[in-house]
Length: 248
Length: 248
Image (cartoon, rainbow over all chains, first blue to last red; front, side, top):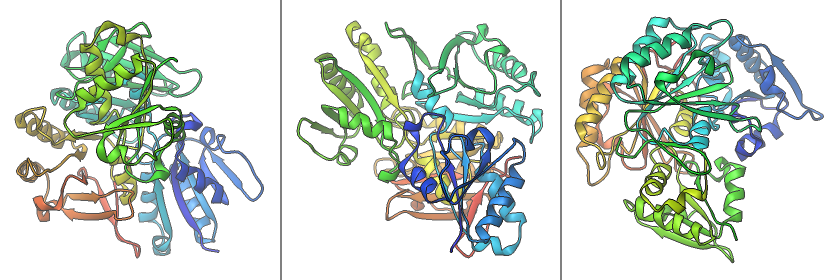
C-alpha cells in the first residue's frame, strides 16, 4: 500500500462549503489527524482511525502524519478554513524539512478550503473587494512589535485588513492594543466587521465604526475585518451591506 | 415567483473545487450572468438562460442581474475564484448603491469560492502560511502610484504578497515596474512563484529567485506569489516545496 498525506481545508463550518476534492480525500483516508474540534467534524466509519489532538501540538501532529504515511497509511490532516492560511500546511512542511530525508519522497498534497475571511466577507457583502491583507494577531510565535509594525504599515498602505485569532483567554490584551493602533492610523468612522461563527447556524455579524469598537467584541471564534478608507455601508431593509469599491 | 441574486465563486478552474452551495445555487437558477469564459463553465439546461458578456462591463452586468431579480428571476452572477476578491461582488454592490431604492429589498447573497491565490499556494506548498497581502496589479481603476506605494509598504511590512492580474496585453509595462520595485525592497534570493492555469490540467508552477524573474514570466492567466523574508524552498524528489514558517 502506498501512503500519502493530504492537508485539507474543511472551510469555516458549513458542510455546504467543503469542496468535492476534500470530501473525496476524506473518503479515501485511513487516518484523520487534527485539532479536536476539526476531527469532530469527520463522521466515523469502518477502516478509518481518528487521531484528535490538542491545540499547540502542530509539529507533533505533523510528524505523526508523516510517520503514518511512511508506513503506507493514507492520512488526511484536517484544518478549519484553508490549510495554507494560519493553519496546518506550514507546520507540516516545517516538520518535513526538519525530518528524515525519506519523508521527502512521500506524496503530499494541500487541498485548499474556504478560509474564514472569505466566508465572513461574503456574509457581510464584499469588504475585501480591493487590495487587502491578512494578519494573525496571535503573538504565540512572533513578537507583538512585529504585529504592531505590520498593522501600522497596512493602515498606511490603505489595505482592508482581515484579522485571524484576534483574542484568546491567554492573550486578552493584544486585541485592545490592535484597536489602539488602528485608532491612531485610521478615521473614527472606519467600519469594522465582527463575524462570529461564520457559516454556522449561530453566525452573528456586527458592523461597528472604529471609534465605537471595544476589545470584548472579538473572541477566538470571531473573524475581524477592517475596511479601507473607501469601504462603505449600504443600508437595506435586510440589513447593512459592507463593501469596498473596485477603485479603492 | 420571488427573485434573487446570488454572486457565486466557481473557484480557479477545477470542478472539484466548486463548493456544494454554489452547485446548488446554479441548479436553482433561471439565469446565469458573467464574463464569457466563466459562463462557458455552466452546462446548458432547459429553463436556464445564459447571459455571457465581455470583460470591463461589470456594472452593466450587475444592473442586468438586479433588474432580472426584480422581475422574479433567480439570477446567479458567476465569478472565477472568489466573487469577493477582485471580482463581481463589489461591482454588484456599486450598482446596488447607485440604483433604484427598490433593488435594496432584493435577496442578494454572496457565496465564497476558492480564490486563485489559495489554490496556487496549495499547489506549491504553503507560501501564504503567515501574514500576507493580496494586490490587484491592474491599473484600470486605480493609479499606478497607489499600486507602487502599496508594494513598497507591503515589502517593508514583510508580508508575503499575492498578485492578481499581473500583466495584460493593454498594460505590458506594469509588471516590469512591479519587479523593479520588489528588487529595490527585497533580497535577490526572495522566492517568487508563477502559477499558470492553477488547478487545470495544463497547470504550470515555476519558483524563481527574485533577481532571475522577468516580466514575461507572467500573463493574464498567471497568479504571482512573492514570499516574505522567511519563505523557504524544500527540495524533494517530487519537486520543490515553497512555504512560509508559522513564526514569520
